[in-house]
Length: 183
Image (cartoon, rainbow, N blue to C red):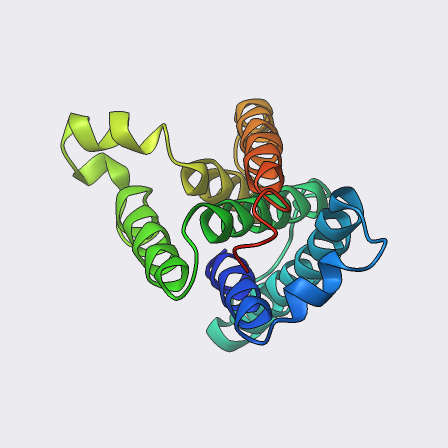
């Protein structure tokens, strides 16, 4: 998730600084094509990196890896969700501030969603707050699919990741092309 969110923010900052975005606006490239191309590239990269990290972690830590078949859509939805979040952040906050905000958002989510410590050890307020964070559902789905846990909980995780993916995609793509002069 970190790679996607920060990668899109850094890419958009660099495209704006080098005036490449302005040249893109002069072409016949539509907003939908730009968003689709960006999503395909970033989601594919995140998907590949996640597979590599899971396999490398399994081999390094000598943990048997017996993933459920639903790991593929979990990784895909997580990659799409993080691509959308990165695009949303980089199009709401312009310039280097989007990179700073991306770091703040991702690290906050890591602390509050159970990536670094179990949510059961925290106060009830933390568990309630984590239910509004997309990383919570991604981590839960990854834990279930990698450990052979309760598949009945996967439905909620898929639903929430799908909602977050669609919402971030819409919010991230709405502002693209709105301020062509600003670039």
